[in-house]
Length: 189
Image (cartoon, helix red, strand yellow):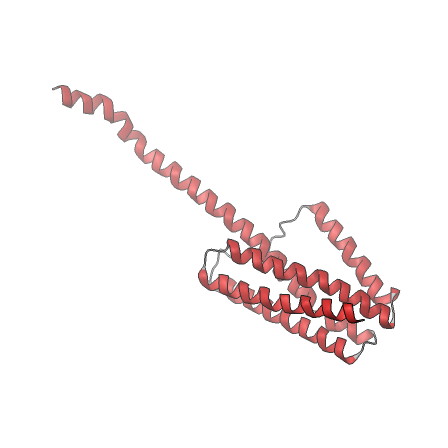
């Protein structure tokens, strides 16, 4: 009799609460997963957006005179950017939770970046010629390739899918190579 009333009055309320606790725990885990994926998606957005911008670099060379070796370097940047974008898009096709459509940056940061981009474009198009242009171009590519390699590196460290980790590591290595080349060229100019 004691054990029967113990079950009825002692564990009865606990058993009734158990489904709610399981639901709450799964909601917390789901929320953590969603926040983690949102964070990753923000990084993927930034890398994809940078690659789209860098793939357009040959348009600048079309209107500015550059030495052939610098034009070749610009073509390698564009090729790497296009390959990186294609890899990211391939990853996205295999996983609907991977998205590049939402800019994670606050509005003021977006405005600051747009202002910097406009100033750099103006400098490269109108503010420099000959060796000064090459110098400004290499400085901008040191910044862009360093950002790309570190975005891919950090994403690879935070990504849980092994196939995506490998792709991101390869992307990072490619941008590292471009970074080192820009730095070497700048030192020798």
